[in-house]
Amino acid sequence: MGDASSLTPEQLQALLNGPALQPPDGVIPNFDSRENKNHIAEAVIPICLVATTIAVFLRVYARIFCIKKIGLPDVLMTIAFGCYITNIYFGYRLLHNPGVFVHTWDIQLKDMSSILYPLFLSASFYIGVVLTIKAAILLEWARIFIPYGVRNVFFWCVYGVLGANTIFYIIVLFLMNFACTPVEKNWDPLFVGGSCPINTQAVNIASAVLNLCSDIFILLLPQRIIWGLKMSRKTKTGVSIIFAIGIICCIAAIFRLDAEVEYTKSTDIIYKTSPVLLWALAEMTCMFLVFGVPSGAKIMSDTHLSSKLTTSLRSLRGKFPRRSTLGGGGTGASSSWPRSSMMMNNSSHADSSRTYYRKLENGHGGMLLTTIDSSRGQQMTESVEHLKDQAGVPAAPEAGMIIRTTHFVTREDYDGYEHCLAIGDGYDRQHPWAKDRI
Image (cartoon, rainbow, N blue to C red; front, top):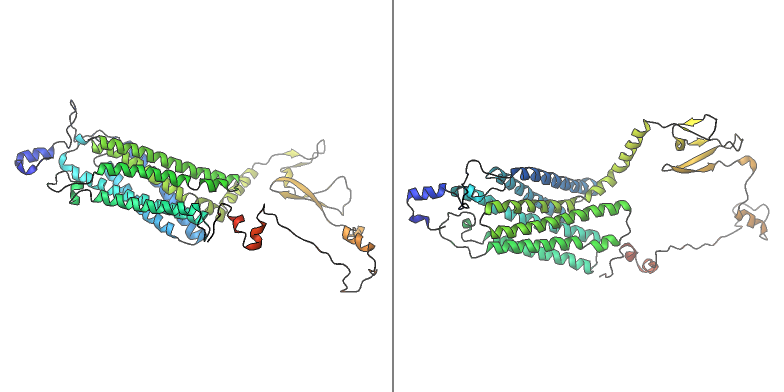
């Protein structure tokens, strides 16, 4: 805006009470009842906050009560969560004043600095979130997928991306905060004097582009290792969920980039800021989910939550027994659960001294076991039979006398990794993706 010092007090007052942006032709500014889309933010912000809080809780619970160890990734997650909560506060502040998707011409010029200041701060806290949570994710993957002492390709990729991210976000943070001199000119359109030598619009677009590339690279980085492992169907399902969350994170980053481009093309900055903030919030939430959700598997494993749930369901099903007839026609013998009988009398052997038991294996068909009948004498095994053919073996050996020795050889086959067992600790068998060691 021009130099306000040349205006009379009446002109200055009229300027401050007027719209912050000249409205389009035929549009009348509405300062008292602004048109908005607050219902979008009222749904998105609580959902993102709840999802992120659950992810953080899973991670903290697993590290404190299950693993009982706190690492650097957990500290970084805590810092990121603090910045995230601050951004949630700024989101609610925007929702309260002036509102979400509100046009700039519906805001008085005198209120612009109080609206732009929290938006200016939220951009810095966004950088704080993505910087620390991405570092936590990369360090966690380094701990899981890189054995101690290994310097393979995956190692250099992880720490290369970590270093590049750190340097990049620190530079962006510096450029955003010191784009104008003095700093107050960044958010106060009424500030007279100073200069803004840095093009903040170009910085925002470059930041969004490189941020999207970083998200995609971090998502694809461990895929070759993960899907190359032999995993159960349950584990593959969990990995697929994490992969899907990562894809959603990249989609949110794409929409945020599009919103940043639209922001730079428009003079209606307040309206165009809303989609940027909402997509950034969705992106940050997905990052927390990628980092925290895997801890849920550790909690379920240590607390046996899945087995307790299965037992509860079985006990609930047991309250509604099903009738069935054993043995077919006409005996009238019935049992509520045919496979739950632990002891059965074999009708084909009418010998009361031989009781047959059924061994249960997870509810599937059993295997008949029988007790040894000592009255029928000891059954000759192969070893006992061969003893009778050996020459020089007395019929009644003395106590402690060695009458036979047996030599046997055992071998474990690890699909071509036997050499590892001979020279070390089976390292390559445990970590087949690692080829180089110190």
